[in-house]
Image 1 (tube, each protein chain N blue to C red):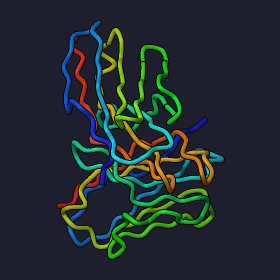
Image 2: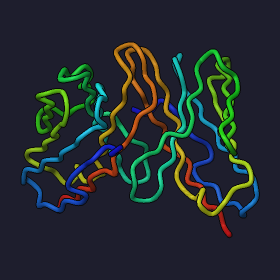
Image 3: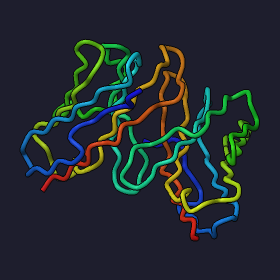
Image 4: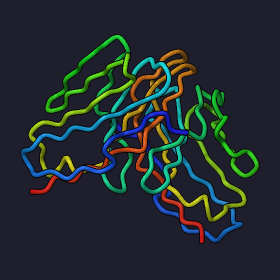
Length: 116
Length: 110
């Protein structure tokens, strides 16, 4: 069974440019998460989806970040425009937990973003 | 914001020794999970302990949970060079938030 797939693996852009990350969760997993991980720190949640509904986006900087999961399967996270401080690893994770539970997460390998 | 705080931040041991790391948190939890992250990779789930459990084992891993002290520990016995990684605790609390700590970087020297 394929794991969580993310692309691209690396992305280098200049500040003020847009960037998008894609994630395909494990088949059948209802819940999808986007985390941001700064160097030497733990992941911080950006947004969590239950199927196509964003149930927690309180940590998503909505002035420049947006996300979508239109059919409740794969998801895209976008930054426009990117700032120097956005340089980080963007991790996607999925789980089969339903609303009311929080079981183990399966993570993709992440997209390492460098903003110059 | 990160609820869990791991201690120590870094740990260096010889192969064959045991490695112990601790996690403290602030609010009530439903469960606590430990993850491992190898350099440049995503996180891998290791073990989940529920709030009504006190100890759990998985292979060479032993996790304890003390809800009165709001703390957990992860013990890796008979460490191997392949155990070199960062280890994160994550707490699941109200609203199904899964919040990660800052991690413990473990180096196992051959």
